[in-house]
Image (cartoon, rainbow, N blue to C red; front, side, top):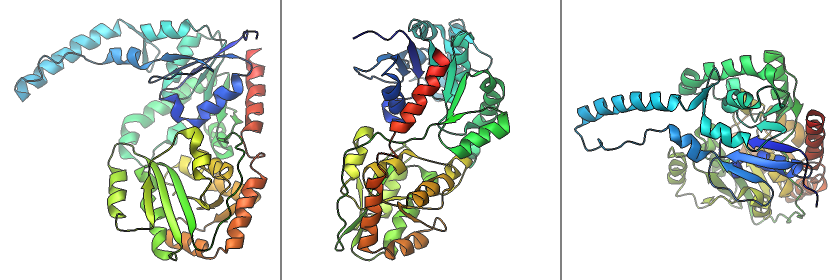
Length: 398
């Protein structure tokens, strides 16, 4: 087999295996190009070469700990001097880019991959990615969010990060060769605020060769999976069980974020026998793990712009799992659910409203919706999105 003549460097400021969007991109582009990925943490793959950025970025941390047993006041004074001295030392090993800095060792490591195009997956790394490209090679940002309003409901984020992100967008987006977004609403927002065009590539999943499991009246199973994020108000979803008959059950598969929220949820609903909190499964196994359920549930209150225009992985995972879908009136999601007649869309995001809609469903209607997911599973898979991505990158890299 001939080695691809062109190379793409994909940079993710995280564990890339946790991001289905990145995995879809790798799958699509590895058919034509040599793929080198840079991320955080240890990753093994036969599909792409990998650079672990974590050890190189950790060079910026202060490693000195000889003073940790000093009295607290003296410890703080010594720590302050150490930080000043150490930061002066590491600045000499960093390359300024106007907003953020990149360690020179990391820069050299990435340069050795000799890419013909760079795909970046985070707005915060965009300044040094553009520095790395040196206006020689094209840079594409795969924007998972509308970053200037990423977490406007969080005062800490607004205080610490919003102005920086807005500055990056104002000064760097026009320097890109391409911009990829996740939904029409987010694409329109980038256009209206920064006058940059983008292509929409959805978070569709690859096609899974599954069949719907018939729903039975004696036990109707509902599932929700995803992040245990406090601003998603998962207790509101769990609250539907109070208004549903005894033949309904609700399972959660939630990834903790380290703030104790998942533990709070488990404690709050510990006496509700019809609610279970189950372990998460690897990204690529989600549709298989959900296939035996009847209804996929997601109520995402629009606490920020991105939530309002969200078109998340889980919608497409519900479809590949061949489930009926129950969602709140999220702008982008409801277009799909209504267009393909995949399930129910409530008028608001309350437990009471969702439960009323679920109670109105007959077994025949649930099975109808499951069969609709089955009918459109291939059309709504990532096959078309991968073709669109390949064509877009081909135009930039030729």
